[in-house]
Length: 337
Image (cartoon, rainbow, N blue to C red; front, side, top):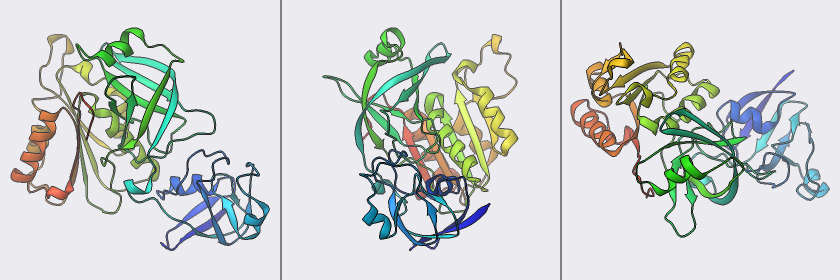
């Protein structure tokens, strides 16, 4: 059975199935409510049921008292609807709404989709979740060293593990550790979420996504979030690399085409053994070749600084993209500001 949930004071509403928690349904329909553990322990998602009935679910009694329940409070990560609902709660609409945490994590899985790329899945402690916006990054905190910044490649709804894509940089102390020393079940510490590179959902503008190399990571998060919430805006994704192995999850990107995402891979230094039949040259130039006017678009660009800088310069000056519609995350090999 399906019910209607309305959020006050925003007036936003969404359908909710009787087997879904309020938080699950809100996230599914693109409305981000405060949360952390998603397990009825921390109380971050606590809010008021103005009208309607819920099944409160399983939770720690110390987190939601009988007096609070009598006053209409519930934990949205646990509560499921028994009728139409009206909620009184704050919605997360900007980076400042999400707390930055310092937390431990465990290396759950290590996969190498290309010789010089490692995908790490990080497991948080039990009863912990990291709330973030699609496209943000975390800082890995190392003893006696500067933090290392890596974008989250998983979308917010898929937060059982934090996914990082790490390229092996010659001479890089941390990347050497990842590729040569790190093993599953190792413990790391991180700080996050950080950054202002995330999908803006308050507009109907078509979206241009541009990634070079492992700049694919936050773009992956943005695409998967857009697909999850059923975003209807046209999306065209360009992924650039030197050789074909740089497009280390090419099959995944191609699968998105079946879901309505237009995809253009571009290589700048093709190898004979690649037998490449696709576009060649610089990835941002492919966008310029395809679009004569970007004045009505948004562009999200992530990757090497030279790519981000060239895209910003040429999109805004040659294709009339408004400066405020250009969002970027440059992958420098030092902490991000």
